[in-house]
Length: 222
Image 1: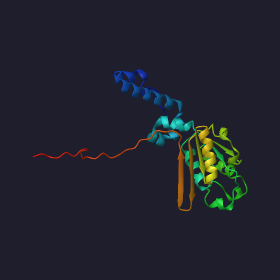
Image 2: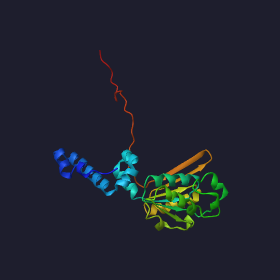
Image 3: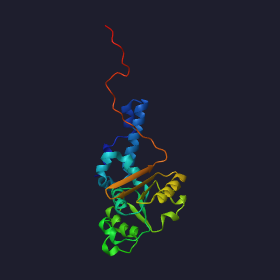
Image 4: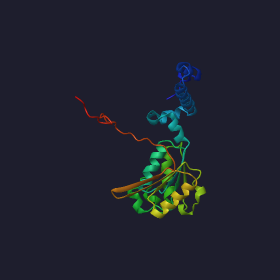
């Protein structure tokens, strides 16, 4: 997919169409910014991520493209998260896992092989994860996450901890709060699972269905 620059509206074209209304100027500015970001992405990238760009737009894809994410543990759940993040085109993924590949991992961690038994789990998985999308930088850290202080988390836009005990999750969460970094924790136990999110400060929208009944019921008169 390529960008036909002659088909893209210019800033002047957009402003002419809006007649200078404040809300229209805001919309025009957003359109110009989106076009500039699309031009910053290569044609190959736009073709690669075409379906998801159609879903959430160029600006969201650009934010993902520059995101550095920390993933703690690549057991079964972490593997699925890593795969989805890499395929969606984030900037970089750093995987921290101090454990070694065991025979039990072969039944759930589909990026390790029998010959990887005894190797560091992050390093063994990263080799095949990288093949999913060479545009994403996949890095590994084989040290224990509990040896890190809060400064370790500062370069990341998002921290995800998988299958950790409560004490470890609480320690990581506290460190992330000190450097104002969003934190997700999740785990699976057989058919059950959980997710915890600490997004520090965020905006959200609650959509409620409106009733066709009047808010105040008045007594009818004859």
